[in-house]
Image (cartoon, rainbow, N blue to C red; front, top):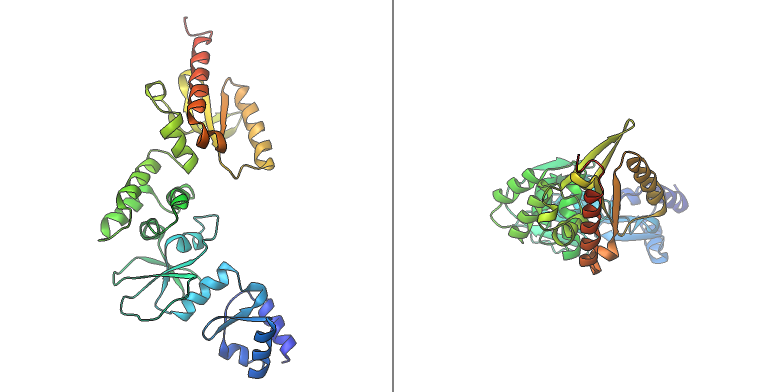
Length: 303
C-alpha cells in the first residue's frame, strides 16, 4: 500500500489509529514524513489520526479511552456521547483509577476515583458513566454558564430523571456543588426544562398572582398536541421562554403553533433571551398585565 493510499484510509475513517495499524499500511519513514507535512497528526503517544479529523470530539474521545484503557467517559463527555447534550464539551472528561500515575494533556480532564460507578457501553469496548452519575460528577466541574444545561438537557432528553440524579448524588461521598445540584434537580422535578425557564420561574412568573401556573402543560387542539413552558389556566395564557438559539425555522413553526392555539382562545406570550436576562421586571409586568386583562375581559367571568 502506498502512503497516498494509507492517507486515504485515515481520511475516510474518523477514528484514532495505533502506530501498528499505520505501519501496516505505510513505512515508518512515510509516517514520519506525513506527520512533518501535517497530513497526519499524533494525537497521543502511539495514536494517530488524519489531520482532517484531528479536532473531532469523537476521535479525541476514542483516543483518550484507547490510550488509557481503564478510563470511562464522565461528566459532559458521557452525556454528549449518550445523546443527552447537543453541544460537544471542549475537553474530554474521564474517570480513571486512583492508583494510575499517567499524566494527561490539557484537553483531557481526568478525575481519579476508586469508587465502583455504574457504566454503560459506548463504542467498541469503551464505556461511559450512566447519565445520572455523569451529571453528579460533572456538574461542579462544568463552567458556571453550562451547569444548568448539564441537568436540564439529560432530563429533557429522557436519558435520566431528577430522581435518578438525586439518588446518584446521595450515593457519592464527594460531589462538588452538591446543594446547587440538588436545587436544580428539584426544579427539573417541578417541570423546569431549561435555564431560560429557570430564570423565568425565579424572576418573571413569580409571586402569588402566578401561583396556579402549570409547568410544561400540554394543550390538545385539532388533533395536535402542543407544550407550553408555562400555562395560566384562568386567563388561557401560555408563556414561552425563547433561548438564544432561536432561529428562523423555529420562529415559523412557533408562529403557526401560536395561531392554532389562538383559534381556541389561548394567547401565547413569548419572552426572548435578552429581555428575560436583562429586564425581568419588564417581562413580569407584561405577564401580569396580560393575565389580569384577559381575566377581566373574559365574557363568561360574571355569568
